[in-house]
Image 1: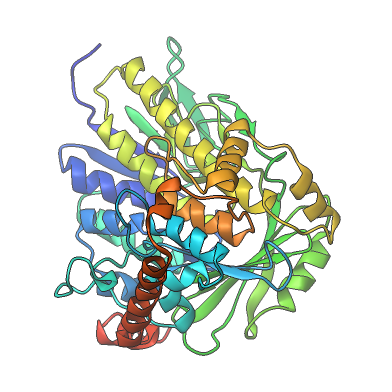
Image 2: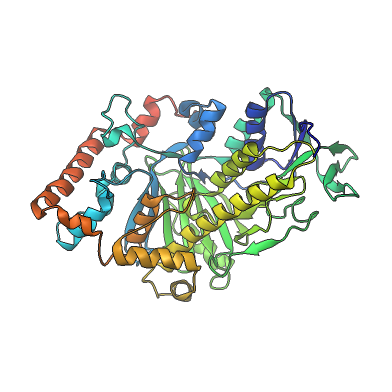
Length: 505
Protein backbone atom coordinates (compact mmCIF):
# COMPACT_ATOMS: atom_id res chain seq x y z
CA UNK A 1 0.00 0.00 0.00
CA UNK A 2 1.21 3.48 -0.86
CA UNK A 3 1.74 5.34 2.40
CA UNK A 4 1.21 8.81 0.93
CA UNK A 5 -1.72 10.76 2.43
CA UNK A 6 -4.76 11.55 0.31
CA UNK A 7 -4.71 15.19 -0.74
CA UNK A 8 -7.67 15.54 -3.10
CA UNK A 9 -11.32 14.75 -2.32
CA UNK A 10 -14.06 15.30 -4.90
CA UNK A 11 -17.68 15.42 -3.74
CA UNK A 12 -20.22 14.79 -6.49
CA UNK A 13 -23.51 16.46 -5.63
CA UNK A 14 -24.44 19.16 -3.16
CA UNK A 15 -27.56 19.36 -1.03
CA UNK A 16 -27.53 18.33 2.60
CA UNK A 17 -25.25 15.31 2.13
CA UNK A 18 -22.67 17.03 -0.04
CA UNK A 19 -22.30 20.14 2.06
CA UNK A 20 -22.31 18.24 5.37
CA UNK A 21 -19.41 16.21 4.00
CA UNK A 22 -17.56 19.29 2.71
CA UNK A 23 -17.99 21.15 6.01
CA UNK A 24 -16.79 18.19 8.08
CA UNK A 25 -13.80 17.45 5.85
CA UNK A 26 -12.65 21.07 5.88
CA UNK A 27 -13.00 21.26 9.66
CA UNK A 28 -11.35 17.94 10.54
CA UNK A 29 -8.83 17.37 7.74
CA UNK A 30 -7.73 20.99 7.47
CA UNK A 31 -6.13 22.88 4.58
CA UNK A 32 -3.73 20.07 3.65
CA UNK A 33 -6.61 18.25 1.90
CA UNK A 34 -8.26 19.85 -1.12
CA UNK A 35 -12.04 19.52 -1.03
CA UNK A 36 -13.93 20.21 -4.25
CA UNK A 37 -17.70 19.86 -4.60
CA UNK A 38 -19.31 19.57 -8.03
CA UNK A 39 -23.01 20.35 -8.35
CA UNK A 40 -25.43 21.73 -10.89
CA UNK A 41 -28.08 24.31 -10.11
CA UNK A 42 -30.12 22.76 -12.91
CA UNK A 43 -30.66 19.69 -10.71
CA UNK A 44 -33.29 20.68 -8.16
CA UNK A 45 -33.69 19.54 -4.57
CA UNK A 46 -36.76 18.99 -2.43
CA UNK A 47 -36.95 21.27 0.60
CA UNK A 48 -40.18 20.94 2.55
CA UNK A 49 -38.76 20.84 6.05
CA UNK A 50 -36.33 18.38 7.60
CA UNK A 51 -36.50 16.64 10.98
CA UNK A 52 -33.51 15.19 12.81
CA UNK A 53 -32.47 13.15 15.85
CA UNK A 54 -30.30 14.40 18.77
CA UNK A 55 -27.06 13.18 17.16
CA UNK A 56 -27.01 16.30 14.94
CA UNK A 57 -26.13 18.39 18.00
CA UNK A 58 -22.80 16.52 18.07
CA UNK A 59 -22.18 17.41 14.43
CA UNK A 60 -22.94 21.08 15.08
CA UNK A 61 -20.66 21.03 18.11
CA UNK A 62 -17.86 19.56 15.96
CA UNK A 63 -18.25 22.43 13.52
CA UNK A 64 -18.50 24.98 16.33
CA UNK A 65 -22.06 26.04 15.44
CA UNK A 66 -24.27 27.16 18.32
CA UNK A 67 -28.01 26.61 18.49
CA UNK A 68 -29.05 30.24 18.12
CA UNK A 69 -27.05 30.81 14.95
CA UNK A 70 -28.12 27.46 13.52
CA UNK A 71 -31.85 28.09 14.04
CA UNK A 72 -31.64 31.67 12.75
CA UNK A 73 -29.94 30.57 9.55
CA UNK A 74 -32.29 27.63 8.91
CA UNK A 75 -35.58 29.07 10.33
CA UNK A 76 -35.48 26.04 12.56
CA UNK A 77 -37.23 24.90 15.72
CA UNK A 78 -36.43 22.42 18.46
CA UNK A 79 -37.63 18.83 18.62
CA UNK A 80 -38.19 16.66 21.70
CA UNK A 81 -39.57 13.62 19.92
CA UNK A 82 -42.11 12.30 17.42
CA UNK A 83 -45.84 11.98 17.95
CA UNK A 84 -47.46 8.97 16.29
CA UNK A 85 -51.19 9.14 15.63
CA UNK A 86 -53.44 6.24 14.58
CA UNK A 87 -50.63 3.70 14.23
CA UNK A 88 -51.71 1.04 16.69
CA UNK A 89 -55.37 1.75 16.00
CA UNK A 90 -57.44 4.73 14.75
CA UNK A 91 -57.79 7.40 17.43
CA UNK A 92 -54.68 6.27 19.31
CA UNK A 93 -51.59 8.44 19.90
CA UNK A 94 -48.24 8.25 21.65
CA UNK A 95 -44.93 10.12 21.61
CA UNK A 96 -41.50 8.62 21.05
CA UNK A 97 -39.55 11.06 23.18
CA UNK A 98 -35.76 11.35 23.08
CA UNK A 99 -35.23 11.54 26.83
CA UNK A 100 -35.02 8.94 29.53
CA UNK A 101 -38.13 7.49 31.19
CA UNK A 102 -38.20 8.00 34.94
CA UNK A 103 -35.08 6.94 36.80
CA UNK A 104 -33.84 3.40 37.43
CA UNK A 105 -34.15 1.61 40.73
CA UNK A 106 -31.38 -0.82 41.57
CA UNK A 107 -30.44 -2.85 38.51
CA UNK A 108 -33.71 -2.29 36.65
CA UNK A 109 -35.01 0.54 34.46
CA UNK A 110 -38.11 2.46 35.57
CA UNK A 111 -40.37 0.96 32.94
CA UNK A 112 -40.05 -2.50 34.52
CA UNK A 113 -41.73 -1.13 37.66
CA UNK A 114 -44.22 0.74 35.49
CA UNK A 115 -45.33 -2.56 33.93
CA UNK A 116 -46.21 -3.91 37.37
CA UNK A 117 -47.95 -0.62 38.26
CA UNK A 118 -50.04 -0.98 35.10
CA UNK A 119 -51.08 -4.47 36.12
CA UNK A 120 -52.03 -3.18 39.55
CA UNK A 121 -54.08 -0.40 37.98
CA UNK A 122 -52.49 2.85 39.14
CA UNK A 123 -49.93 3.76 36.44
CA UNK A 124 -50.34 6.75 34.18
CA UNK A 125 -49.40 6.54 30.46
CA UNK A 126 -45.70 5.81 30.02
CA UNK A 127 -45.03 9.22 28.43
CA UNK A 128 -46.07 10.99 31.64
CA UNK A 129 -42.83 9.79 33.22
CA UNK A 130 -40.56 11.32 30.56
CA UNK A 131 -39.81 15.04 30.64
CA UNK A 132 -39.28 15.08 26.87
CA UNK A 133 -42.65 13.50 26.13
CA UNK A 134 -44.62 15.46 28.72
CA UNK A 135 -43.03 18.76 27.65
CA UNK A 136 -43.61 18.02 23.97
CA UNK A 137 -47.37 17.57 24.29
CA UNK A 138 -47.53 20.64 26.55
CA UNK A 139 -45.71 22.78 23.97
CA UNK A 140 -42.84 23.44 26.40
CA UNK A 141 -39.09 23.44 25.74
CA UNK A 142 -35.73 24.24 27.28
CA UNK A 143 -32.22 22.90 26.98
CA UNK A 144 -30.58 21.14 29.91
CA UNK A 145 -30.31 23.38 32.98
CA UNK A 146 -26.67 23.71 33.99
CA UNK A 147 -27.56 24.46 37.62
CA UNK A 148 -30.02 21.59 38.05
CA UNK A 149 -29.05 18.66 40.30
CA UNK A 150 -27.60 15.74 38.34
CA UNK A 151 -30.59 13.53 39.15
CA UNK A 152 -33.12 16.11 37.96
CA UNK A 153 -34.83 15.49 34.61
CA UNK A 154 -34.04 19.13 33.75
CA UNK A 155 -30.32 18.32 33.85
CA UNK A 156 -30.57 15.98 30.88
CA UNK A 157 -32.90 17.03 28.06
CA UNK A 158 -31.75 15.58 24.73
CA UNK A 159 -33.19 17.34 21.71
CA UNK A 160 -33.03 17.58 17.95
CA UNK A 161 -34.11 20.13 15.35
CA UNK A 162 -36.55 20.87 12.57
CA UNK A 163 -35.18 23.10 9.81
CA UNK A 164 -35.35 24.16 6.19
CA UNK A 165 -33.06 21.71 4.37
CA UNK A 166 -32.32 24.14 1.54
CA UNK A 167 -31.22 26.85 3.97
CA UNK A 168 -29.16 24.29 5.88
CA UNK A 169 -27.26 23.34 2.72
CA UNK A 170 -26.59 27.02 1.93
CA UNK A 171 -25.46 27.63 5.52
CA UNK A 172 -23.01 24.72 5.36
CA UNK A 173 -21.82 25.80 1.92
CA UNK A 174 -20.86 29.19 3.32
CA UNK A 175 -19.16 27.49 6.27
CA UNK A 176 -17.18 25.11 4.03
CA UNK A 177 -16.16 27.72 1.46
CA UNK A 178 -14.81 29.99 4.21
CA UNK A 179 -12.59 27.07 5.23
CA UNK A 180 -11.24 26.32 1.79
CA UNK A 181 -13.81 24.13 0.04
CA UNK A 182 -14.14 24.81 -3.66
CA UNK A 183 -17.50 24.65 -5.40
CA UNK A 184 -17.64 23.90 -9.12
CA UNK A 185 -20.88 24.49 -11.01
CA UNK A 186 -21.64 22.11 -13.83
CA UNK A 187 -23.37 18.96 -14.98
CA UNK A 188 -21.29 15.79 -15.16
CA UNK A 189 -21.49 14.08 -18.55
CA UNK A 190 -18.70 11.48 -18.23
CA UNK A 191 -17.03 9.50 -15.47
CA UNK A 192 -13.51 8.24 -16.15
CA UNK A 193 -12.06 5.11 -14.57
CA UNK A 194 -8.55 3.78 -14.12
CA UNK A 195 -8.22 1.04 -16.75
CA UNK A 196 -6.22 -1.16 -14.37
CA UNK A 197 -8.32 -1.23 -11.20
CA UNK A 198 -11.62 0.42 -12.18
CA UNK A 199 -11.30 3.20 -9.61
CA UNK A 200 -12.72 6.61 -10.52
CA UNK A 201 -10.01 8.90 -11.85
CA UNK A 202 -12.02 11.95 -12.88
CA UNK A 203 -15.41 13.39 -13.77
CA UNK A 204 -15.93 15.42 -16.94
CA UNK A 205 -18.35 18.35 -17.07
CA UNK A 206 -20.63 19.38 -19.90
CA UNK A 207 -18.23 22.17 -20.92
CA UNK A 208 -15.27 19.79 -21.09
CA UNK A 209 -13.62 20.55 -17.75
CA UNK A 210 -11.97 17.53 -16.17
CA UNK A 211 -11.93 17.23 -12.37
CA UNK A 212 -9.65 14.54 -11.00
CA UNK A 213 -9.41 13.23 -7.49
CA UNK A 214 -8.11 10.44 -5.27
CA UNK A 215 -11.23 9.87 -3.12
CA UNK A 216 -14.73 10.50 -4.48
CA UNK A 217 -17.82 11.06 -2.34
CA UNK A 218 -21.06 10.21 -4.17
CA UNK A 219 -23.86 12.52 -3.02
CA UNK A 220 -25.68 12.44 -6.35
CA UNK A 221 -29.01 11.19 -5.03
CA UNK A 222 -31.08 8.07 -5.70
CA UNK A 223 -29.39 7.33 -9.03
CA UNK A 224 -25.90 7.05 -7.52
CA UNK A 225 -23.90 8.39 -10.48
CA UNK A 226 -20.61 6.94 -9.25
CA UNK A 227 -21.52 4.13 -6.86
CA UNK A 228 -24.19 2.58 -9.09
CA UNK A 229 -24.28 3.92 -12.63
CA UNK A 230 -20.50 3.68 -12.95
CA UNK A 231 -19.39 0.99 -10.51
CA UNK A 232 -22.60 -1.12 -10.64
CA UNK A 233 -22.47 -1.85 -6.93
CA UNK A 234 -26.00 -3.22 -6.65
CA UNK A 235 -28.95 -2.43 -4.42
CA UNK A 236 -30.63 -4.49 -1.70
CA UNK A 237 -34.35 -3.77 -1.50
CA UNK A 238 -36.40 -3.62 1.69
CA UNK A 239 -39.73 -3.04 -0.06
CA UNK A 240 -41.20 -6.37 1.09
CA UNK A 241 -40.89 -5.08 4.69
CA UNK A 242 -41.21 -1.33 4.07
CA UNK A 243 -43.66 -1.22 1.16
CA UNK A 244 -44.16 2.55 0.87
CA UNK A 245 -42.51 3.70 -2.35
CA UNK A 246 -43.76 7.24 -2.97
CA UNK A 247 -44.26 10.53 -1.18
CA UNK A 248 -46.06 13.72 -2.10
CA UNK A 249 -44.71 16.80 -0.35
CA UNK A 250 -45.72 20.44 0.07
CA UNK A 251 -45.12 23.26 2.51
CA UNK A 252 -47.98 25.23 4.02
CA UNK A 253 -48.50 28.42 5.97
CA UNK A 254 -47.78 28.18 9.67
CA UNK A 255 -50.62 27.90 12.16
CA UNK A 256 -49.99 29.03 15.73
CA UNK A 257 -46.83 28.36 17.70
CA UNK A 258 -44.59 25.58 16.35
CA UNK A 259 -44.82 22.32 18.25
CA UNK A 260 -41.56 20.95 19.71
CA UNK A 261 -42.14 17.59 18.03
CA UNK A 262 -42.62 16.04 14.62
CA UNK A 263 -45.96 14.39 13.89
CA UNK A 264 -46.51 11.16 11.94
CA UNK A 265 -50.18 10.35 11.29
CA UNK A 266 -51.08 6.96 9.83
CA UNK A 267 -53.24 7.03 6.69
CA UNK A 268 -54.99 4.28 4.74
CA UNK A 269 -51.90 3.30 2.72
CA UNK A 270 -49.04 4.97 4.59
CA UNK A 271 -48.60 8.02 6.78
CA UNK A 272 -48.33 11.82 6.76
CA UNK A 273 -45.53 13.91 8.24
CA UNK A 274 -45.80 17.36 9.80
CA UNK A 275 -42.58 19.31 10.50
CA UNK A 276 -43.06 22.78 12.06
CA UNK A 277 -40.53 25.49 11.17
CA UNK A 278 -40.54 29.12 12.29
CA UNK A 279 -41.94 30.42 8.99
CA UNK A 280 -43.95 27.48 7.63
CA UNK A 281 -44.85 23.83 8.09
CA UNK A 282 -43.34 21.02 6.04
CA UNK A 283 -45.81 18.29 5.07
CA UNK A 284 -45.66 15.05 3.19
CA UNK A 285 -47.69 11.91 2.58
CA UNK A 286 -45.67 8.69 2.33
CA UNK A 287 -47.65 5.88 0.69
CA UNK A 288 -47.57 2.60 -1.20
CA UNK A 289 -48.47 2.92 -4.87
CA UNK A 290 -49.87 -0.63 -4.88
CA UNK A 291 -52.70 0.54 -2.64
CA UNK A 292 -53.12 4.23 -3.49
CA UNK A 293 -52.82 6.45 -6.57
CA UNK A 294 -50.81 9.65 -6.72
CA UNK A 295 -53.98 11.71 -7.10
CA UNK A 296 -55.62 10.14 -4.07
CA UNK A 297 -52.49 10.58 -1.96
CA UNK A 298 -52.24 14.22 -3.00
CA UNK A 299 -55.90 14.82 -2.18
CA UNK A 300 -55.47 13.33 1.31
CA UNK A 301 -52.40 15.48 1.96
CA UNK A 302 -54.07 18.71 0.86
CA UNK A 303 -57.15 17.94 2.93
CA UNK A 304 -55.05 17.61 6.08
CA UNK A 305 -52.89 20.74 6.09
CA UNK A 306 -52.91 23.33 8.86
CA UNK A 307 -52.72 26.26 6.46
CA UNK A 308 -52.71 27.35 2.84
CA UNK A 309 -50.28 25.30 0.69
CA UNK A 310 -47.17 27.12 -0.47
CA UNK A 311 -46.73 25.88 -4.02
CA UNK A 312 -47.76 22.75 -5.85
CA UNK A 313 -47.34 19.30 -4.28
CA UNK A 314 -44.42 17.27 -5.65
CA UNK A 315 -44.49 13.49 -6.04
CA UNK A 316 -41.28 11.63 -5.21
CA UNK A 317 -40.55 8.01 -6.04
CA UNK A 318 -38.18 5.85 -4.03
CA UNK A 319 -37.29 2.29 -3.12
CA UNK A 320 -36.35 1.54 0.48
CA UNK A 321 -33.09 -0.33 0.79
CA UNK A 322 -29.33 0.10 0.68
CA UNK A 323 -26.34 -0.34 -1.62
CA UNK A 324 -24.67 -3.73 -1.44
CA UNK A 325 -21.51 -1.80 -0.64
CA UNK A 326 -21.33 1.78 0.62
CA UNK A 327 -17.62 2.09 -0.17
CA UNK A 328 -16.56 0.61 -3.51
CA UNK A 329 -13.02 1.12 -4.80
CA UNK A 330 -12.35 4.83 -4.19
CA UNK A 331 -16.02 5.89 -3.95
CA UNK A 332 -17.96 6.37 -0.71
CA UNK A 333 -21.71 6.93 -1.07
CA UNK A 334 -23.55 9.26 1.31
CA UNK A 335 -27.18 10.32 1.56
CA UNK A 336 -29.63 8.99 -0.99
CA UNK A 337 -26.79 7.54 -3.06
CA UNK A 338 -26.08 5.08 -0.23
CA UNK A 339 -29.64 3.94 0.28
CA UNK A 340 -32.99 5.16 1.51
CA UNK A 341 -34.91 4.79 4.72
CA UNK A 342 -38.29 6.44 4.68
CA UNK A 343 -38.38 9.46 7.03
CA UNK A 344 -40.53 7.81 9.71
CA UNK A 345 -37.97 8.25 12.49
CA UNK A 346 -35.97 11.11 10.94
CA UNK A 347 -32.89 9.00 10.22
CA UNK A 348 -31.75 10.40 6.85
CA UNK A 349 -29.45 13.13 8.15
CA UNK A 350 -28.19 10.84 10.91
CA UNK A 351 -27.10 8.32 8.27
CA UNK A 352 -25.22 11.07 6.42
CA UNK A 353 -23.56 12.20 9.63
CA UNK A 354 -22.73 8.64 10.65
CA UNK A 355 -21.23 7.87 7.24
CA UNK A 356 -19.02 10.96 7.43
CA UNK A 357 -17.86 10.10 10.95
CA UNK A 358 -17.15 6.49 9.93
CA UNK A 359 -15.11 7.61 6.94
CA UNK A 360 -13.07 10.04 9.04
CA UNK A 361 -12.40 7.29 11.59
CA UNK A 362 -11.27 4.94 8.79
CA UNK A 363 -9.74 7.62 6.59
CA UNK A 364 -7.43 5.96 4.06
CA UNK A 365 -4.07 6.74 2.57
CA UNK A 366 -3.47 6.68 -1.15
CA UNK A 367 -4.00 3.20 -2.49
CA UNK A 368 -6.94 2.60 -0.10
CA UNK A 369 -6.48 -0.54 1.96
CA UNK A 370 -9.28 -3.09 1.37
CA UNK A 371 -9.32 -3.79 5.11
CA UNK A 372 -10.62 -0.26 5.73
CA UNK A 373 -13.25 -0.65 3.03
CA UNK A 374 -14.42 -3.97 4.47
CA UNK A 375 -14.72 -2.52 7.98
CA UNK A 376 -16.63 0.53 6.76
CA UNK A 377 -19.11 -1.58 4.81
CA UNK A 378 -19.62 -4.00 7.69
CA UNK A 379 -20.42 -1.20 10.14
CA UNK A 380 -22.68 0.62 7.67
CA UNK A 381 -24.63 -2.56 6.88
CA UNK A 382 -25.16 -3.27 10.58
CA UNK A 383 -26.44 0.28 11.09
CA UNK A 384 -28.83 0.17 8.14
CA UNK A 385 -30.23 -3.21 9.13
CA UNK A 386 -30.90 -2.21 12.74
CA UNK A 387 -32.63 1.01 11.66
CA UNK A 388 -34.58 -1.00 9.09
CA UNK A 389 -35.88 -3.32 11.82
CA UNK A 390 -36.90 -0.40 14.02
CA UNK A 391 -38.94 1.08 11.17
CA UNK A 392 -40.54 -2.26 10.34
CA UNK A 393 -41.70 -2.48 13.97
CA UNK A 394 -43.97 0.54 13.45
CA UNK A 395 -45.82 -1.19 10.61
CA UNK A 396 -45.88 -4.73 11.99
CA UNK A 397 -47.03 -3.91 15.53
CA UNK A 398 -50.54 -2.72 14.74
CA UNK A 399 -54.10 -3.80 15.39
CA UNK A 400 -55.30 -2.10 12.21
CA UNK A 401 -56.98 -4.17 9.54
CA UNK A 402 -59.14 -1.36 8.14
CA UNK A 403 -57.37 -1.25 4.76
CA UNK A 404 -55.50 -3.69 2.51
CA UNK A 405 -52.23 -1.88 3.25
CA UNK A 406 -52.47 -2.31 7.03
CA UNK A 407 -53.69 -5.88 6.67
CA UNK A 408 -50.56 -6.64 4.64
CA UNK A 409 -48.27 -4.96 7.17
CA UNK A 410 -49.85 -6.66 10.14
CA UNK A 411 -49.48 -10.12 8.60
CA UNK A 412 -46.18 -9.78 6.74
CA UNK A 413 -43.20 -11.94 7.78
CA UNK A 414 -40.40 -9.93 9.40
CA UNK A 415 -36.65 -10.40 9.96
CA UNK A 416 -35.87 -13.11 12.50
CA UNK A 417 -33.95 -10.80 14.84
CA UNK A 418 -36.83 -8.33 15.00
CA UNK A 419 -39.30 -11.14 15.68
CA UNK A 420 -37.10 -12.25 18.59
CA UNK A 421 -36.95 -8.72 20.04
CA UNK A 422 -40.74 -8.45 19.95
CA UNK A 423 -41.23 -11.89 21.48
CA UNK A 424 -38.76 -11.20 24.31
CA UNK A 425 -40.37 -7.86 25.15
CA UNK A 426 -43.90 -9.27 24.97
CA UNK A 427 -42.91 -12.06 27.36
CA UNK A 428 -40.94 -10.20 30.04
CA UNK A 429 -40.59 -6.54 29.06
CA UNK A 430 -36.91 -7.13 28.32
CA UNK A 431 -34.84 -5.50 25.59
CA UNK A 432 -31.15 -5.88 24.81
CA UNK A 433 -29.37 -3.46 22.51
CA UNK A 434 -27.00 -4.95 19.95
CA UNK A 435 -23.64 -3.23 19.74
CA UNK A 436 -23.85 0.43 18.79
CA UNK A 437 -27.15 0.36 16.95
CA UNK A 438 -28.66 3.81 16.60
CA UNK A 439 -31.86 3.41 18.60
CA UNK A 440 -31.38 2.65 22.28
CA UNK A 441 -33.55 0.71 24.72
CA UNK A 442 -35.70 3.72 25.60
CA UNK A 443 -36.70 4.19 21.95
CA UNK A 444 -37.64 0.55 21.38
CA UNK A 445 -39.62 0.40 24.62
CA UNK A 446 -41.65 3.52 23.82
CA UNK A 447 -42.54 2.35 20.32
CA UNK A 448 -43.39 -1.20 21.34
CA UNK A 449 -45.65 -0.07 24.16
CA UNK A 450 -47.05 2.76 22.04
CA UNK A 451 -47.90 0.29 19.30
CA UNK A 452 -49.72 -2.00 21.69
CA UNK A 453 -47.09 -4.60 22.63
CA UNK A 454 -47.77 -4.76 26.37
CA UNK A 455 -45.50 -7.21 28.21
CA UNK A 456 -47.19 -10.18 29.82
CA UNK A 457 -44.70 -10.14 32.68
CA UNK A 458 -41.80 -8.21 34.17
CA UNK A 459 -38.47 -8.92 35.84
CA UNK A 460 -38.80 -10.94 39.09
CA UNK A 461 -36.71 -8.41 41.03
CA UNK A 462 -39.57 -5.91 40.70
CA UNK A 463 -41.58 -7.98 43.18
CA UNK A 464 -38.99 -7.33 45.88
CA UNK A 465 -40.47 -3.83 46.20
CA UNK A 466 -43.53 -3.72 48.49
CA UNK A 467 -46.75 -2.47 46.92
CA UNK A 468 -46.84 0.76 48.96
CA UNK A 469 -43.24 1.55 48.02
CA UNK A 470 -44.00 0.85 44.37
CA UNK A 471 -46.87 3.31 44.36
CA UNK A 472 -44.75 5.93 46.12
CA UNK A 473 -41.89 5.41 43.65
CA UNK A 474 -44.03 5.56 40.51
CA UNK A 475 -46.22 8.45 41.71
CA UNK A 476 -43.13 10.34 42.84
CA UNK A 477 -41.57 10.14 39.38
CA UNK A 478 -44.80 11.42 37.82
CA UNK A 479 -44.94 14.40 40.21
CA UNK A 480 -41.32 15.32 39.50
CA UNK A 481 -41.99 15.32 35.77
CA UNK A 482 -45.14 17.44 36.25
CA UNK A 483 -43.17 19.98 38.29
CA UNK A 484 -40.34 20.14 35.77
CA UNK A 485 -42.67 20.73 32.83
CA UNK A 486 -44.42 23.44 34.82
CA UNK A 487 -41.12 25.32 35.15
CA UNK A 488 -40.31 25.22 31.44
CA UNK A 489 -41.10 28.10 29.05
CA UNK A 490 -43.14 27.57 25.92
CA UNK A 491 -41.27 26.44 22.82
CA UNK A 492 -41.77 29.83 21.12
CA UNK A 493 -40.67 31.72 24.23
CA UNK A 494 -37.45 29.71 24.42
CA UNK A 495 -36.63 30.29 20.75
CA UNK A 496 -37.11 34.04 21.26
CA UNK A 497 -35.16 34.12 24.52
CA UNK A 498 -32.11 32.37 23.14
CA UNK A 499 -32.00 34.71 20.15
CA UNK A 500 -32.72 31.95 17.65
CA UNK A 501 -35.72 33.56 16.00
CA UNK A 502 -35.11 34.10 12.30
CA UNK A 503 -36.05 37.26 10.47
CA UNK A 504 -39.11 37.09 8.23
CA UNK A 505 -38.45 35.04 5.10
